[in-house]
Image 1 (cartoon, rainbow, N blue to C red):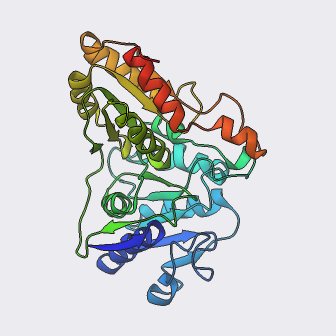
Image 2 (cartoon, rainbow, N blue to C red; image 1 turned 90 degrees about the vertical axis):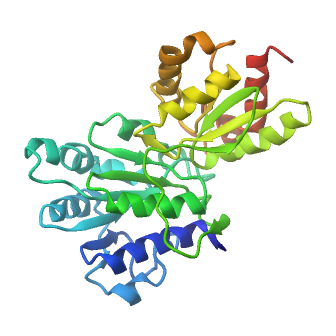
Length: 326
């Protein structure tokens, strides 16, 4: 095992897949000459050249459409958005073309494409640069949605996403690119749609994904000192969702808390809560608790932003609510 940064794990995944498959290429703003806005493509232009690592103009709809069209001629593009907030400019290509080409062509044209970039809040960036759209994309049949929380998962999941014959939304975080973690020296793949139990526990199940899961880890340490054991499940893939892993955990703990960095209305947490009450209602000993951002645009003020985002204390409080303890 070696220890590398999240951005290096992303770079390794893309580079390894490009070495093994000439149809794979990377396109996006600043991915080539600048080595990526967050240095996730560092050195790739030198290795693969300007025909496979392509600097695009500030026109997400344009280069997104080029990439989607190129899948129909046998290519497997990786489209990098500087942030998924900018993907809204090109969302027509993602929703109306990438997600639907296979069905609308009667299966003649698969669409093996990965749209990747940062999601969620990254500090004082204001309301239009601090949004999480996992639930938006997960609401679209034909798209797969992946949100890794660490370098190991990021590399294995991204390699699987690149090899997938359907469009994959791969969502990262500006605040995780410098995170370090152990990654195997050799090749490995993490299948899409498989959750991971990051911490085993007996009292309450906590389900989360992406960088906000760190707040669950911090809460677990606090709760452990009080004799409360929580089981933390990292979804890793939002769609397809590993419902079985969640249900099996809830059957053991009889309680569920869902932690998500997104607005509460129509969220991923909402879908999880529905599935659990549908499939494991008789196992629940307390109402399901959701933890989301406040139902407002993100503030620029650091004080208000701190209040807006979920934190470890929110998790502690929600866990105790399911246990009916103060």
